[in-house]
Length: 211
Length: 211
DNA sequence: TAGATTGTTAATCGATTAACAATC
DNA sequence: TAGATTGTTAATCGATTAACAATC
Image 1 (cartoon, helix red, strand yellow):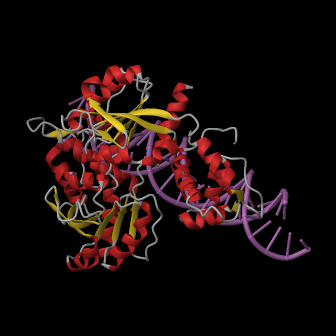
Image 2 (cartoon, protein in one colour; image 1 turned 180 degrees about the vertical axis):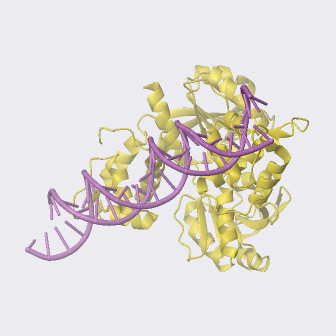
Image 3 (spheres, protein in one colour; image 1 turned 45 degrees about the vertical axis):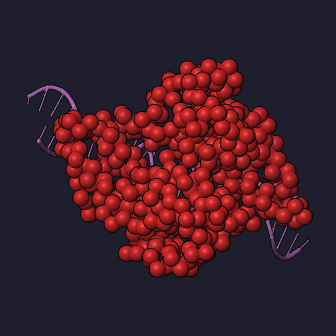
């Protein structure tokens, strides 16, 4: 693995694509793979692929390409699989459940360790082997477990309160699915995942197609 | 509403933010709102807000700002609320259910009209007043209902097949939640919504913070 | 050697931001 | 009038892409 300079956000977002593509390749296939073929498969520019790969590994060889296994391992290293962080999810509704059941986060260096919810019907249940606990215990437990990542999948009116509680518990990074701009103290990072905010892009395309 | 030139993708993605912010304002508040205050609230650059708003409406007035109601209506027009498209969702798992229950798509000009699934336990049920039907009926029904938008929330191995069926049924725009690069004929648009692909961005920030 | 492939340097493109003029 | 606010023009920035040299 390469000594990293900072990796651009755009590149960072593409790394999971490469990893899942490489992992899906047949095990008995060739040992090498070229940036050209990756680019073709993922519908990307091949120079872009090479630049991206250059930022995670120490390169391929002309005419031969990259060693597939090495590339996978470099990508995993870079995506942080080695030091996996525990996360707490708050709000075990449909979206929360979907995330709890999503197996691939481990690959990216995050594991949902515990979930919290307010509804009696959810509290005490287990989803994909993860316990759903009462939201009352959020602060104390996250603090004790030294959890640094919070995932917010509660309705928008509750999001800021949950966020505040997570911050008090020592959470430093928040993945926010509520369509709300969260206020956090300096040093805490928020990543907004507003499902639906790219919908206009799709509908705009459609409108043009239909004419 | 303004006669539109093409709106940039970045702008298009921000429009829902403005709309939901404006809608959340108290009804008995002031009639006007300034780009400055919107920018503050949403943590954006104020020139950017003005440019974005310029592309949907016919502008505000110096010293006064924009008429809140007019701005809301312009945003709604632009986001296509007037001609709402029917969509079909395929895959009524947790994520599918979350989307079926999400009320806000109507605002953006899309309504999920029907859902399809393979599992016996889901077929025949109703989620948020939307029928879940057998995947066998997908092609015929989507075709008959003249559905133009497909939402794919099935496991990745099934995604391409579902996509093909949707395309055969005449779907022109696909919102894809499976972590797979779909192959579609020309004229069909795919918008990939890879939840998790921005996770590395968050974890990278975290790693820097922790040091 | 010839050709496929890599990596780098420079050009392009799109989006953001800064500076400023216009206006109510 | 003075000041808040708008809109526009130009500068900056980051990311993508094209052209080319290096190499196995």
